[in-house]
Amino acid sequence: MSDHSSTPTPIDGAALLEEVEAFHRRFNVFPSEAAYVAVTLWDAHAHLIECFEITPRIAFLSPEPGSGKSRALEIIETLTPRSVTTVSASANALYRLVGMPEGLPTVLFDEVDTIFGPKAGTDEALRGFLNAGYRRTSGAVRCVGEGSNQNAQVFPSYCAVAMAGLGSLPDTVLSRSVIIRMRKRAPNETVEPYRQRRDQKVGNALRDRLAKWADTVRDRVAEAWPEMPEGVTDRPADVWEALLAVADAAGGRWPERARAACLELVHAGHDNDESSLGVRLLTDLRDKVFCGADRMPTAAIIECLLRMDDAPWGDLDDKPINSRALARLLGQYVTPAGKPIKPRGIRTPSGFPKGYYAEDLADAWLRYCSPAPAEVRHVRHTATPQVNGGESVAEAPPASATWSATNATPLTTAS
Image (cartoon, rainbow, N blue to C red; front, side, top):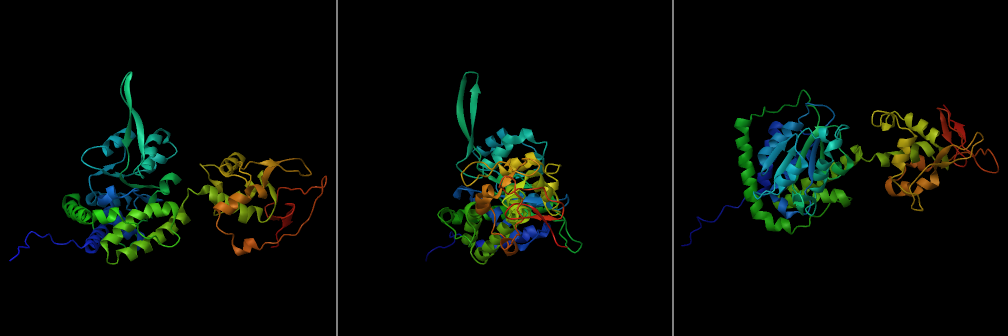
């Protein structure tokens, strides 16, 4: 008679993830079902981080304090391996933390907005750690030793990182992150009070069970190439690959829920991503400023941008956009000839002001902007040529003007 007493009981990964999700729901009100799914999968992925080439960051962001960001990190701290919570750490200390023999840490950064705020210029090394550690092959090269007896040494930075902060983050960080935009709880949204002495034990027990489950699926996850939802490619696919692999390993409804969450949060991230300021500028120039005109003086462009109530152009770094900021943003992109977009002289009856030509912007519009809305694509302008030496000219528009497609002469908008 065989003895099966030593056979371990299989762990139901789907049920375990449901318990982790329920633990979050006790103390956190996230903005959507997709957020609960993403955070739960992120917790589990931290136990399997050695299986992946990329570990996504997860960022809890909100416009105001008191939105539950820090509480989310507290709960994650109880569920993830070797978690370290900090609001202040040097890059060198973090590099050494990652290299410790105990294993890769899970770094939880609260008040991360203090790193990337306008007065955080001394934290470029820390910014580099957060960006580089997203990919396994990245690290920092440092000199180790004293005096002339120094050697170059590579310090790894690959580890799981969760962040919480006010406002937004630089594009290099946002593009590497699952973004959870937290909100203040509504009066009808209630949670249990979190008491560390009591509730940490429950989270740690779930953490230990996640670790045991991870050991049973490690080989399968390491070889997995999860199928991405349609339309999720490039950097968003990199961000979600590990989370989808965890969902597939858990089974049950998690593969379906994970892909639905992926689509929802990737789409929401694109809609809210303040980092794509250049793309927003290009789109506004095409759809709301040029509107078919072939050239526009810089002064006219800035006037049009500042009239847009729902746009960020009135408050860039605490001041309205000006010609220098416009040139800096557009200079990141190139003309069809491959040269940086720059202002050029435009002939007008009153002189030669600097401005921009639609032909210089055309390639950037094609590559970076979504297709123009139908009402913009089908705009037709009436040509009203003003001749000066045989050339079309442009004038700065009054506040209620649009621009002619052939010569940028202002045409009064019908009320």
